[in-house]
Picture 1 (cartoon, rainbow, N blue to C red):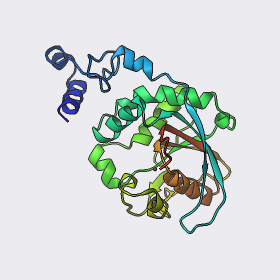
Picture 2: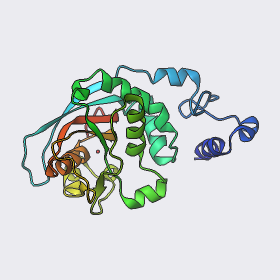
Picture 3: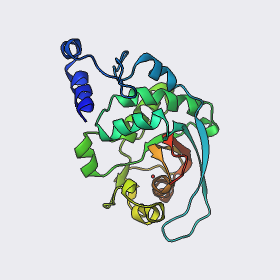
Picture 4: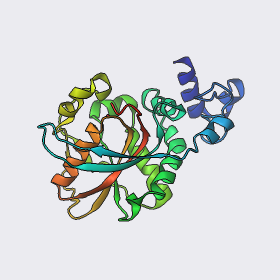
Length: 237
């Protein structure tokens, strides 16, 4: 926690603070370099993995549906990337998006998911969580991917329409019902006939992505697939 506060302060205050307290690498605790100064050079280089492709068998909370959703991830949640994503989400470090975004872009561009030039739609967070963090992690990731690829980004086009419990606090068996019917397109937004790509930070069971896909399809949109920063190996998000 202390290291997290130091890193946040160093990023906000800048050079003067860095001179007295050099920024620490989020992953190994060594001296951080580069922009943003959150990782050391070896750890930064270690993020350039091959990425992974995955396919989610989707179902809705009522037990119906035999659909599937193709996706790709910059890496697995169980490795260094997962530690970085946890810092992004739980230490309120929005600059991490600039470190993770390039890996997401790399795996996306080598996949088939870009063939339709989809509109990027981030998975929405609750208003309470957004106030707590000051940002929505998937939105910042989608913004980075949009900047690097030129794909359009519908920021805020998907909304939470009811409260849910944090997925991470629930067993896999309860996650589908927890998010069912919790998302919808924002008022006045139309995706009818458009190809979209869902963007999230972590995929575990796929329940959250499934709900986002349902909301898009309910509005007449098509879902080309999903792009996430990290995919859990256990598949227990």
